Length: 381
Image (cartoon, helix red, strand yellow):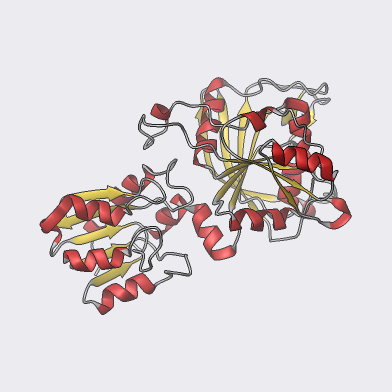
């Protein structure tokens, strides 16, 4: 039976799991708390793929004291051999009497089997304590395992009148330094950063995380920051061989539908990955691209693109979240819009948004919203 104390202990386990926000990819962020006689005896969190899972970290810290304890775990313990042995076996061998899991693991290799294995060995099991918070901590892992797609955030910065660049194309800087640092934290938690060829040709962006490890909780100060995969939607393969991102740490993937084979060979020789994904009318099929990224174990995608590509994600029902930074200035009616959304002629055509969070980031207003739209095919490039 779940008690009030169970919720308090699970909240602590979730805070532990948050320490892996920037480091566990492509694995989920997981925390574990061992409690005996109402007192915490050990804790653990998963730091990085290939490393010990949260349960094993906590069990190692507890030693013999784990016998008879309750384990509060933010995700169902694994029951299969992957990069590490099953955590269910470790919990049983340590003599843990009860396991409280926040949520079932969406991974088909587990998906309730871990809880069944524990019950079969005499361990009391409960599941569903703070489940919403646990799933919200791993939106990309949950979506990839359950739907075969990563979780997609569209990040945009605009003036209060909804403009993203002057008519000339000048856009540096719309938002404040505080907002730009916040964006780098979004990049750091993402598996991939996605943009369009128009942005590459106009701005030659780096698309890297440029924050010291000390500013990323859980990273510590040992080693470089993990750089997300850079993805460029480039239907006609116009990507310049001298683009800055090819000389930077991390991988670059170019998605095209056509292009000069010789240029493709040059890009691949320079270190880029090139993937052909045809769609209707020569455009990239964005849904196919997302499925390909899921196959590459990409959990969370941050879209940093112009109004055409951002609009395509919204129109196609492929954006899970919009992150909008509104700066306190006006740029006028000749400046460029946030989204290119042709075909919205009547009020019934509009795309609804559910605002989930509003807060100040420096002088800017940051709005988080989820599109209220059904799934639909879409493409762009």
